[in-house]
Image 1 (cartoon, rainbow, N blue to C red):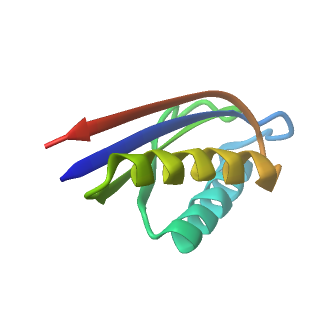
Image 2: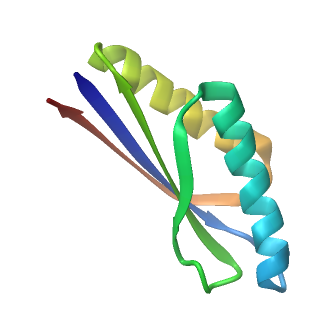
Image 3: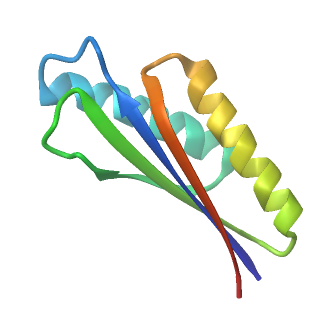
Length: 95
């Protein structure tokens, strides 16, 4: 079994409140979840309204497939254009 995890750190320039941040983050989470069928959630920087951290995980049996999907997730998050991506992290664990 192969588990792939990722972390996307976002900078939200136009957000002036936590309500505005929540709208952008929820939109990105829903689009990623619907397109890739993965577990995804906001995992950090909860009280900072111009920054967000979104974490996700995938499970499969082929590490190259998991790696490819994680790259596609990072690319889609950037292509959405909802926020500036300032950092991405990826880890693949073989169990």
